[in-house]
Length: 66
Image (tube, rainbow, N blue to C red; front, top):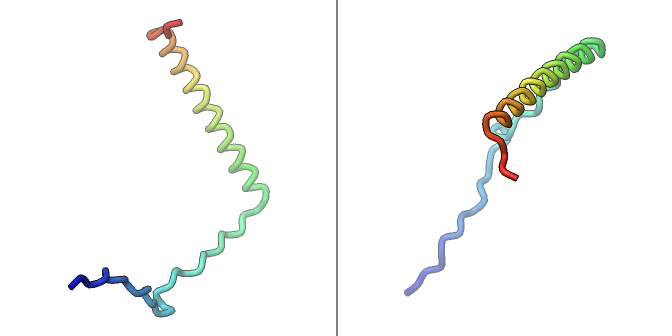
């Protein structure tokens, strides 16, 4: 005799095991946000310049075939 495959029942969770509510972000003044974003942009620009330099060095050492 062949039995049907066991179908798992949906798990029932008590309320206390649910995901917690998201924690609200701290209130940051707009001036601080602008300063933080400017710092991020400066760092990204520096990273981009370093990557450009690496790309130029690699192109000099390993020229691509036409």
